[in-house]
Image (cartoon, rainbow over all chains, first blue to last red; front, side):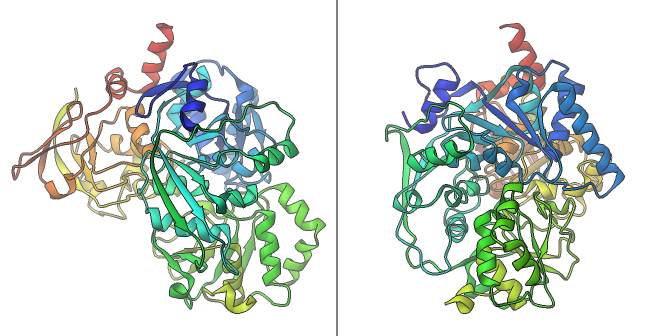
Length: 417
Length: 165
């Protein structure tokens, strides 16, 4: 059996499962954020009306709001807090960080686990060798909360093998964006992506993280990296909870796709969709007024360090607002210990609280029709951040910061090489 | 139950949930969300969609957010069924879980123009263009999902399965 078959067979109490079969499996973790969590809570209490079976498996993180901007949102968050208290589920309140970083940082995701969530980027937890996927609120409210289960069609596995070494200023984020363009939006519908090969194995866990993150945007159900010694060390650093890691037998792979990442340039995802990925030189020159490190694809301590390396002897362009949104309190604390908070502040950047940042402009990041943002966010669909006319580019921390310095989409190699 | 006929609204590839329901409206009333549904892609849609209409789309319909609210908005707008080349998988789950029939039918975008009348059988996968002729067979829907649809969605299905042990 492959990795996904093994995890789902174990979770559904069966000796084996086959791709295409529908199984009802035990879930180990349900991750909810303040938006979908609210919608899920309403369905659970108003339409389902059963007790919460395993409160310890359910976690809610307020990450779209670091603080409520309106009375309506304050009410939503209060209702979420009351929901969490009523059912005894764990709540991480405003300012905790991005849902997925909070979950892994607190040891709430383990290798071999079944992890589901309301956020569509939940597959990112496959980085740790979990089977992780996003489900709608009815899945959580009708099966997850009252029975501790979820239904799945067992997906086919597509193995993505990456080899080669990237050049200067080309990060795992550039590779992830490039791969999104290669596979294409909807190019891997229903598949489980197995990210493998020497390039992936050679990355630190939090750089591998950026690859499974793309699963949803190429239509995949899940994505994973088979756990190895690096995974083990990463998990052991945050929790002593027991786990049983799973690796596939190398069989039952529907397709293998191989790429060499050597020679890739920095990549920029251009408006209007996540599949419009170009080498940076094709996008360079477009004026930007907003730059942001944050969201699912950024705000890690690694991103903050990259930004600081660009801004060491430089300043943010006077026409640009450069916002930094740490992915977790731990990332901010580490940045402070390394002196990066002050350094980036003095260089003209603005620090925001740990959160999902400008994701859908819930509490920051709305754009006027004639404004442009470049960010490490995961998505750039028109209308997500204020005006549908506004333009959003996605890039690595290096390219975002280089663009914040230049006041236009810029190639970081021109600054740093 | 699974066979229906309706007038078509046709959309392109990769329609995101953000276009079906605006992110800034998800805490608003259902009627407000319906009043803006898909307006960015077709300004006539919210005002002119009628109960029983069928939505036809290209590849990867309903990508982006996994919120079931997007499927609920289409159902509340009166859409009887969505037929697409392919669906984003969370939208596909959400449709059946809230009782909105969906059919995956490669080739449907070329079979249908806006306003055509389409017959759809979600169980068998059969699609017939009653305005200009032509038929296709989409992917038959899994028995588990047909059972969910017949039960009225995942909540009643889960309750029944729990009672049955």
